[in-house]
Length: 252
Image (cartoon, rainbow, N blue to C red):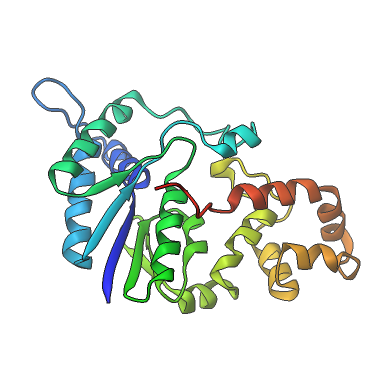
């Protein structure tokens, strides 16, 4: 089997930038150009290659606004502006990847998640490949299959999430991550979900009724305040499902 590693480039760059920033360390070269994100990013890429030993590797980046922004004005609306010192380092990171012989992808109108999702789908279509996604973004957990797993980065370590680990953690199939987000929302992406429903209640509903559709098909079986919240925020729930779903047909 040939291993394909898919790296969430934006995620790694942000992690690298803020890791040094929070420690009070600012790094620049002799011209005063900021290098803290680059330093961490290169170290992480080298570590990934050393640990995973892939036959193939690709890095995906966001570029500009996506079809989600066009459909929903609120999408990621509450996020802070990317610091200028970090923005400056992205073009250099891409030059370094090219110098390392690593292909990167950025496609107007799509997120890095969608690029990774498209490659993940291709991996599952060909029996000779297995895939490992590298990111701390839980949205990507929906891409876990028999052939693709996620190395979910934590502050000091990681969790290797395959289908079994995901099920043991959530009591659901990985593809249900979209249904989970549709109910509980995601503040980091400004995805509203159903107001007043958190992860615990969302998991209970999905474990009982199987999906977002299943929840609403059985709405009369749900009692009390939870039922009221679901009815009042049904439109937001389905909007959130749409936004949380990774697109797998990016023209790469």
